[in-house]
Structures are given as structure tokens and as C-alpha cells.
Image 1: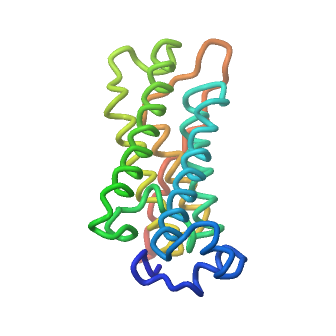
Image 2: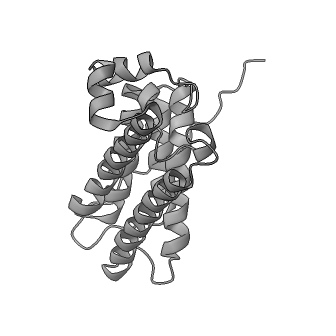
Amino acid sequence: MKGFANASMADLTSAAGVGYGALQKALGTREEILSAAIRFCANAEASLAHEPLRVSSTGREAILAMLEENARLRRRWPRYCGCLFTFNAFIVPPGDARLHEFLTERRRSLSKHIRLRLTQSVAEGELPEDANCEALANLCLTLLSGLMFRALDGTPPGPLFRSLELFVNALGFTPRRGQARPRVIRPARPRRGRN
């Protein structure tokens, strides 16, 4: 990943699928085009993360679906993802305070929505009453931040999705009355060599 400062106009026009003149007319300077691209990417990623939180019937399903959808996004398009969850220093120029604040606000907003969904799970008896929803939301956001690096490392889907399920199981969700207990994935035990 080249990062914000090293992206050329050829990179931008190739990614956008339109000519430089059209991009410049619509958005302005190279810096304005790059800023618009990062804002678009961040909004798209935030929407992808928010949707499972809104529509899933249980908190466990919501958190797992949010993580899995973002893992799929990063595996499909690793070069174009990460605007929201990668450290700002890799993408945004240090002096661009407005863009830093925009990305920080998007992360705060997602953390808040995760916390609200976890709080709902406490109210519904899916999480214990003493669950620290703010700490768990921050933990979920931290895991999201690391997904891109694992995808860029070429981690195969199997281990990646097993790790996500282990993580969600460890959050302490229990099924509500009338629901089947979720499948618990345990880490594989190392094989012993023959003597």
C-alpha cells in the first residue's frame, strides 16, 4: 500500500475508472481528490460495519457478522480497504487535522453503535448484567483494526474466520430461551510427533 502521500494521479484515475480531467472538475486538486477518496472509503466501511448491528436478531450474530463482513471486504479488495480501521499515519498526511478528525469520529461512531448493541444484549439476557459494554466495544473495534493487516499478510479465510468465531465466543454470549446454543470452536491441539 503506497499511502496517501505517494499515490499518483495515475493511481487515482485507475482506481476511479475515469480520466484526470473529470476527477479534477468534480473534486478539485490532487489533495482534494485523495481526501474525497478516503472519506468515501471510510463511509463505505462504516456502513458495512453498521448494517449487521442493525439487522441481526441477536448480539452474537451482529458482532460475528460485522467482523466477518469486514474480513471478506479486506480479502477481496485489500489494496483499497483500510481507510477507517488502519492507523491514520499510514494514510493521512500529519498536517491534515480535518481528515484525522473525520476518521476518528467515524471510529467513535462505530464504537458507540457496537456498545449500544452489546447493551441491548445485556437487557435481553444474552450477556451478563455486569458486562462492561464499553470495554467490549473497544475490544471489537481493536480487532477490526487488525483484520486488514492479517488480510494483507495473506492469512487464509479458514484460520481468519475461526479466529473471529473464537473471539465472539469469548465475549460471553449465551443463547436466549428457545435458541440453540452456538457452536463453540476450540483451538486445534498440536499433533504430537512419533517417537
